[in-house]
Image 1 (cartoon, rainbow, N blue to C red):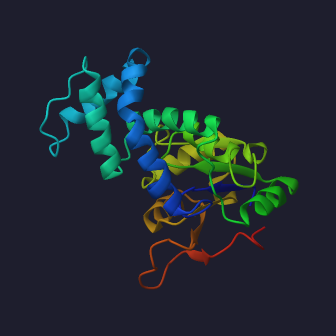
Image 2 (cartoon, rainbow, N blue to C red; image 1 turned 135 degrees about the vertical axis):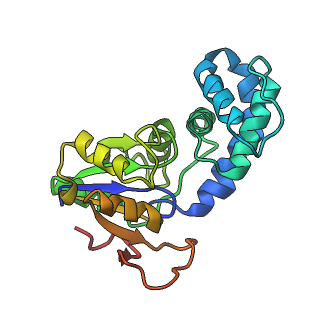
Amino acid sequence: MKAILLDIEGTTTPISFVHETLFPFARERVGKFVETHFGSLSEEIKQLIVESSNDASYTIPVEPTQPGSISAYLQRLIDQDRKSTPLKSVQGQIWDEGFRSGELIAPVFNDVLAAMERWTESGKTVAIYSSGSVLAQKLLFAHTNYGDLTPFISNYFDTTTGPKRESTSYAAIASNLDIPAAEILFISDVSAELDAARSAGLQTTLSVRPGNAPLEGDPIHNVITTFAGLD
């Protein structure tokens, strides 16, 4: 292996932190944030208007000139855990304020720091691929319970690269890293993501961490419960 590509939720970080801390933090503040930063969110608003026009589950028109209308739709997307690029962008900006103020500290599993140190010392590339925005990823790893882990991470990928359940996304990541797909190990807690990565030629490992969904049947991917010993 020349590179380790890591998911975040359920792989480096407990799922509970995302769903019980980050999502509520953003939801509670999205109304005020949109109202305060409305003028700088023009690109996200354009994307949200397009997304809402194709969203059959949301019948209320989203008005591009009304902050309350925009924030209401964003709250709906948060409640659905929608993998929406404009939502992830707004969430990332809200979390930015929370991490910088010290209100948010991201927990990582106790084997993560040692593994990243070990991988980078041996010359491996460590990269992140998450549905959260690149900004949110960088903020999370810069403000963990083990300190700033960003010096160990060379690349970040989010949904602008492509959906995590499509093989073309992993081919694009391999090309960006300039490393053959077969020499990249992708670790995630979601089998469908691993299936897509394997289709693109990557090595794959299923992360089974406390709080993750229980395994169903016999997994086709290698299974780990810790990064310890993973070289």
